[in-house]
Amino acid sequence: MNKTHIVKYSAEDIQEKIGQGEDFTDWQRVNALRDADIERAMRDDPDWQEFIDIDWSKAEMVYPKKKKAISIRLDDDIVDYFQSSGKGYQTRINAVLRHFLNEQKRLTK
Image (cartoon, rainbow, N blue to C red; front, side, top):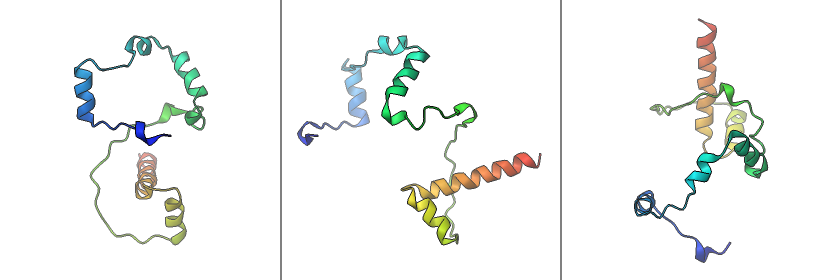
C-alpha cells in the first residue's frame, strides 16, 4: 500500500462533504439490494467467512452500562486465557459474568 495516497477525514469533514453533495454512495443501488443479494455478497467476502453461518436469532443488543472500578483476584490461567485473545479482555470477562448473572436470574424465576 502506498501511504502517500491515504487521506484522513474527521466525522465533521465527512458531514460537510455530504452536505455539499460530495456523497459518492449509490443509494439507489443500495436500497434495491435484496436479502439474497446481501447474503451472496457476505458469502463472497472473506471477512465474513467465520460469521456467516452463526445463528443470530438469539443475539441481544447490549448497551454499555456504567462500570465500577474494583480490584479482583483471579487465577492466572483465567487471566492468561482472556488476555491471549487481545485487547478488551476485561470487557470479555464482564460479558461472561453478565451471561452467568442473566442465566441465574432466568433459572430462579
